[in-house]
Length: 329
Image (tube, rainbow, N blue to C red; front, side, top):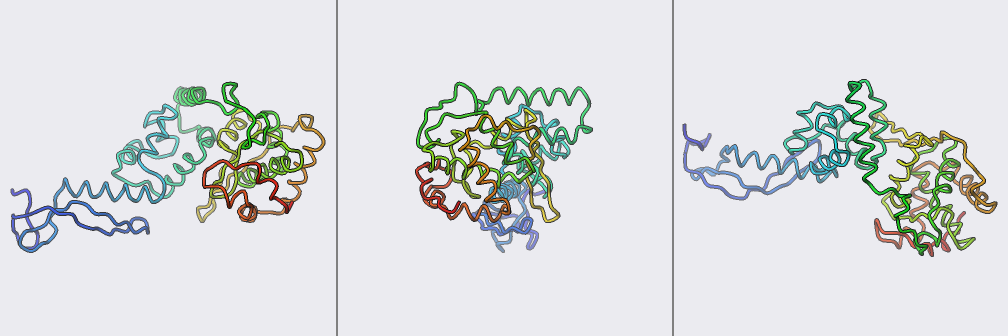
């Protein structure tokens, strides 16, 4: 049987050229240019298993890039915690062969797995919560091995609070040494009655910057960076994860029927006000009270109006000198 035959005219004479394709994948229009085989007589597309497979992979790759998740992201996420494909597939709730197809780039995660994987990429601290909430998926020995591997991966990563971390006072930390106790107790105060993570991070920004404006130094010594949803503490995932592991706070992710994510944080232990002086406590409570009736959308929009946000490049650290432009609180 001849390898390449035109379905229209039956010709066996073919050639290969670049061809522009437009596909719709999960309501997203994907345009790519790839090599395809054509009939030399009628110019009809001719089936070529090798080239068509490359085209399919390229479509998947472009779609993955458009949603912010590539096969490399999935592989790196799994390797980060030293997990096997079988272990990781159980954590996210899919079959091992399905995960393999994602990592090879031969298929696209469905909406449920897309949300799960994106959540883990954006919020690594959720991994432990997912394991605990789906504990019945694992045999007892397997559960112990998974937790051991994750614990070892944390040890191999530098902690935000490690003594080795450079902590020289600069204009990006409010000329203040990083304080584990003040970060922890600030979060405990702000999350006493529960709040969403995005709101928590904005309130922390305002507390530290107002402290710098009024006292010449920040409270926590944290650096803040400009992100799409406003200023946030740099390495905030490590901060949240540290206190989740210590069981100081509870971190839960909920999903609405429309697919929105809600990252809830609640304190699990009583805060220690003695780590703050009187003025620091006053600023914390003032900011908390000011934003009391703000929802996430409103506080994000509020922070976007600050000069600190407008004049800082995306994902760059914010200079504390912008604190003197904050005048609405």
